[in-house]
Amino acid sequence: MSAPSVTMPEADIRWSLPARGPAGMYCLIAAEAAIFTIFVVAYIFYIGKSVSGPQPHDVLRVPVFLTICLLSSSLTIHFAIKLLSKGRVISFALWWLLTVTLGAVFLAGTVREWRHLIHDEGLTIQTNLFGTTYYSLVGLHAFHVTVGLLALVTVLIFTLLGNVRREHTQRAEVLSMYWHFVDVVWVVVFIVVYVVGR
Image (cartoon, rainbow, N blue to C red):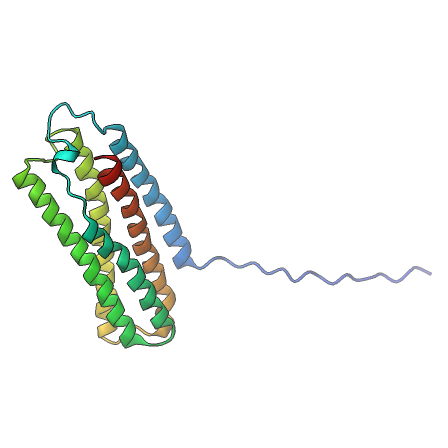
């Protein structure tokens, strides 16, 4: 007589794909980080190699106020997401609007700085190596801020039209990941251009 077979319980292993939104944003951030790394390395490599002026220490002003505005916008968007997750849509809209305002102030300050450098200091992208690498790096960041602001404004419009609710928290959070990335990149740009580069 054969011994009865013993059936072992199957392990309850469940595996699911990660959410598409965060996964896609992580991939985008990784690709963008690689691009920024190339521009940062190029800027560092060419520091002090311009044979003609102006040089960074001659024309650059440290944008402390603008930096505070942009970094503060990471806090305001964080608070906005928390409020949306609690269903407080009106409060979310106010904090989201504050985020947009801070980002717009930063971008306007960048435009003002460029106007000063071009018209008052004579520094263009063709002036020297400093001008080329400066406008390339800071311009790349300004482009990303612009894209982020357009996305934030779009969400704000949808919110004012009553189309954003608590169940949209994850989508707003994915967008906030991009905005946090833009802020982190600015910290690197600020250190490289306005601290190390001067």
